[in-house]
Length: 225
Image 1 (cartoon, rainbow, N blue to C red):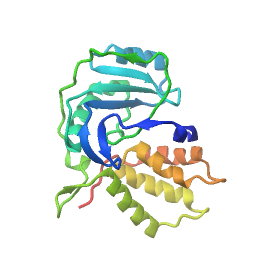
Image 2: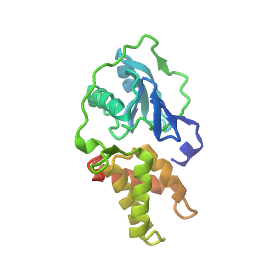
Image 3: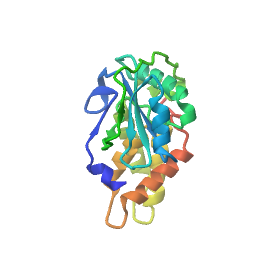
Image 4: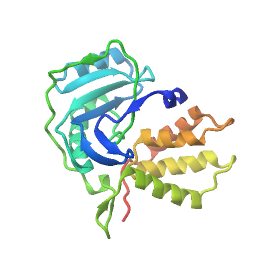
């Protein structure tokens, strides 16, 4: 939805430098629930959980966002281990699993019925990440930031694939699949692909390409080695 590009946004989970380098965590995880049948019902269920600090309707009007308290972390790896455990805890409610990056951008929305629980309990469980969930270089043993992963994939894509009016849908689909495979958050891809909007190539069409790619391509299944 193009209107989202005009909304204010924040990174709930960390204080970041250039939106890629984590300076310190905030002790918060933001969960995203898309295309919800009944937002009021889901918000009620979430508000009954002792770990939910806040929950509200997302900008689309048919989704829900929720904040969970976790310990403050100093690394993306530690954050993801808590995130994995939170996702498992709320899995039956259908959270989006592709929102695992500490630098995930969240568009703000207005919900006068937002629920806030100042006495929410901190979620202290964590789940170890697997090798395929970590982006790393075997010869340097270095974890890549999301920004550097995006830059590397863009360079590869721009050299290998033709982006002309007859090929742009397929070309962007390939790029979106690659971004998903290498663990780039869907929202980051949506932000990135906003630059491809043209007079005959609307943002709604681009979002459909991204949705299709993230459903097709296994998230965080590849790494640079």
